[in-house]
Image 1 (cartoon, rainbow, N blue to C red):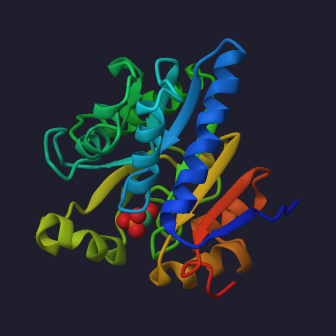
Image 2 (image 1 turned 60 degrees about the horizontal axis):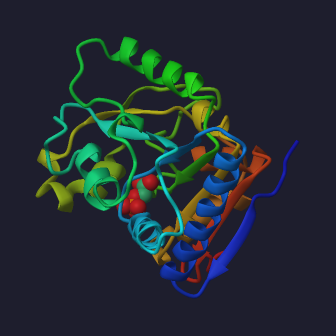
Length: 249
Ligand code: PGA
């Protein structure tokens, strides 16, 4: 069955992120009140930075604690050690984890340096299952339509695995790495199936450069050529957009 995702359009990205941070803080509180940890799936990239800032502000104001939160990040570049400044491990600590009260052993990201990639991916899936599955999954969207690093051609039922990065994705990452030749060629990503198993999903997209792919994701055919289009089939998918990203809807 196709259920239209819920679309909220905000004047500024900061407004969208503040609203989402309040929503997530409320979700954490209600899940913790039921006597179990809340399991959050987290995302990297420039898009979620104001969301993490808003969560940190709520934490500093005493409005949310992360003591009973478990996190799983979507992806990590293969070949980068955790200490590399562009690793998603470094990003997440810089942007969020170093500023909140989450216990270190509640944090999970795929490893960028790993001997047996398929075994590591199976362990990651098992760790998500052992935590009880993901309550809330945060997503950005790449210009290829990827969620996580599920580039065009990623099957609907794909699970955590190695993925070869699309040339557009590598181009978009080139400035941060100081040149295209410095950008890793592959990554480990949760699969589309892993993401779609989350009980609630929020996709953030800001700026006019996201307008065309947001339209494809929400109003185009459901296809593995645009992995975000699979969200049309999720029962609780929510898009938080600014005016520029919603311009073609
Ligand atoms: P961005 O990346 O937030 O840096 O635009 C989004 C993505 O690729 O998912």
